[in-house]
Image (cartoon, rainbow, N blue to C red; front, side):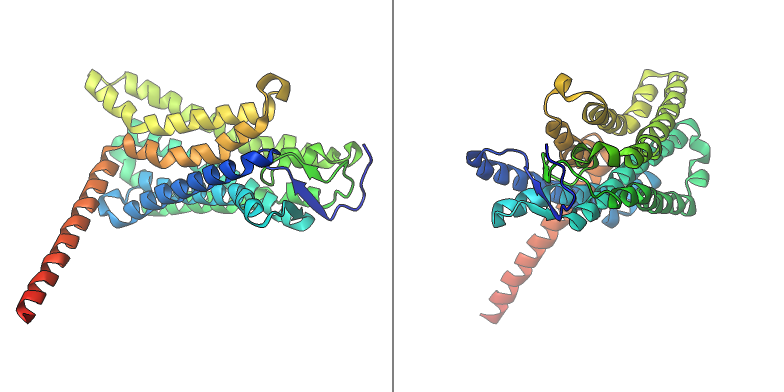
Length: 325
């Protein structure tokens, strides 16, 4: 394959090359995107409005909702724009900017989930000191660290990517600006520094450190739960962190399948990219809502207030009209 020294734009192949599938894919992607926005925005609004949800757990869950909406916007908007405009080209600089944002958001999601595992550890293993340890200042510091570190840590990767000018092709077989498909088209002799940074700093931030901290937290959580004498108490304690455990299991499984298993063993990695970046964002608000009594109660209360206010408004208007008559 001929080496190209002057790439000014990349061509994104999207989810499928089949013209007949473009319309169904557009409809499906648009529907998923709207559900992600509505689900996470609804959960975030509920957390903001209900005072009894102003706790560390829901504070970090609100951060996760913002991350999910941002991640979906970054990954899906190109598919939607390509169908509307017919243009599947991405300028070189734009690709790197989007790559930076995506890398930062993925790191942010991992760090927020890791912080949530620490919050669950404190809540179950040290319940008497929970409010003291997870106070407002600590939560704010932890959230600020997650956001700041996420957007700083991927600067070396993007800086190394900026230095690359040799590509085997300008066609990227993916549907958003990700690092792995970008590295696949870079000339081998230009890839050394980017691969070194990715395999060290990137691997530590995305996988080793967060995964180790999460596993450590859950080891202590499981030990604490096993010490609870009653089965009802054990079930209740485990139920409070079950949604978070499910999300972490799905996330790290998709990471392994997407980045560390050869394609010939698992087929197209676009499917795992879609699951990792979109389906999890779709599932998160529902997993935390369906399996959480506080969210259910808050939602029913808001629906009740909305109905009563609407009914009251209608009645007031009817009475007003009758008085005028």
